[in-house]
Amino acid sequence: MKLLDQTLQRIKPLDARAMAKAQAHLDELTKPPGSLGALEDIARRLAGIRGEVPRRLSRKAHILMAGDHGVVAEGVSAFPQEVTPQMVFNFSRGGAAINVLARHASAELVLVDIGVASDLPELPGLLKRKVAPGTANLARGPAMTREQAIAALEVGIEVASAKIEAGNELLGIGEMGIGNTTPSSAILAVFSGRPVEEITGRGTGVDANRLRLKIKAIQQGLAINNPNPDDPLDVLAKVGGLEIAGMAGVILAGVAMRVPVIIDGFISGAAALVATRLAPLAGEFILASHLSEEPGHAVALELMGLKPMLTMQMRLGEGTGAALGMTLVDAAIMIYHEMATFSQAGISGALKS
View (tube, rainbow, N blue to C red):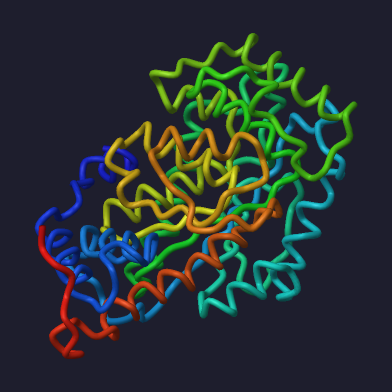
């Protein structure tokens, strides 16, 4: 049996009893019920995933998947494909935004070459798990074979499982891949049924002409490949990306091993859409960090029933929003365990209706 099938079979619902117990404790804290909003929801969700709200998160890992895309040949990006390996070098040296924010969140940054088009040398912190040297051009045919899509999902499962077994209690996901908002928009178009032009944004800041090329490439790819929305693997293989598949695998491993996964913006949102179509219960284990400036992100979150913690006008990727979200998970845990209850503080509680 494939690792993917084994992982999907291990997925179970949240612990409703633990969530009710956590909610009762939250309601006894010295505040009006629900007044800490998303922080309370995070604590309650952690209880459902873990069986209780942990006292602290001993270790966190942020997994960044890097891969290239053949669709850049259609002129969909303002940056050349060479930027992907150049940024991987930057990540390895610790100089990118995600390096700074992962350090801020006290999270280990795990770099994975799952599909960079060029051969990378041995670099500090880089896992070389290349499934293919980038995807094919989705505007001209399938981006991947079904076997490649499964292999990339399983890379994500393997990397995440190893980090969880090493003691990590919270996972974040991020990506690097020039052109990857194009397959993300294509995935969202299939699952949402929305018009491509409505959910496709400027990504790295493309001008109006490149935006037209991007929309045309996606429309052409959908027409040529005819991905089946009822078959998530078909969608992923035909119009997806290797790093998108890898992130979806990370989510599935976290769900199967009952470790929360915090997603970033639009591209990790597309990965989460794939994961939740493969395993509908997965959405209950996902924490949405922020609302991206990409127009499709709000649609993706709505499809999954997720609410973002932050609105920061961010659209960088790399998992920068997820790293910021990790600090809010820490805050939610501290609130849950360190804030006084009404009885402890000697304060009259809210009147019961």
